[in-house]
Length: 172
Image (cartoon, rainbow, N blue to C red; front, top):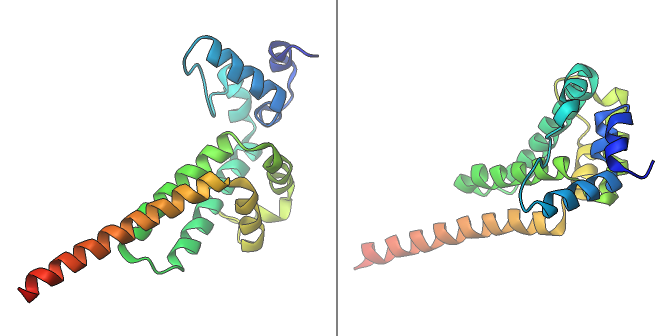
C-alpha cells in the first residue's frame, strides 16, 4: 500500500501512523504543497477517537512525556543555575514535546521500545532514570541541546551583567 491516504484508513494504531516515516514525509509534502500548516504534530484528524479510546497508549504517552520532562528538570536543577532553572526547563520541555510530536528517525525504535515496556508504567511517572536519560539522549537533537544551552547561557550572561553593573554603582 504505497498511497499514504490508503494507509491512513488501514492503520491499526495511531502511534504506528505517527511513527511511519513515509506517511509523515507525505504529510509534510502535502502541507508544503498548500503553503501552510494543515495539521502538524498531534493532529490525528479522524483518528483522534481511536487514540482517545486507546487509553493504555494515551496513558503511556502522557506518562512518558511527564517523565521525560521530570528527568530534564532534575538534570537542569543539578547544575545549580539558580533563577534561570525554570526558564531553561521550560525550553527543555518544549524541545521534548516537539521531539515526541515529530521524532527523528533514529529515535523511533527507542520510543517504541520504551512504550512497550510494561514494567516502566506502574507509577505516575517512570522512575528508571537510566531509561529516561538514554531516551533523552536519542530523542533530543544537537540543535535542541544547543537551544537549551543557549537559553542557559543567555540567562547567566544577563545575571552577570546585571550584578556587575550593580556593583559598579555601589562603588561610585
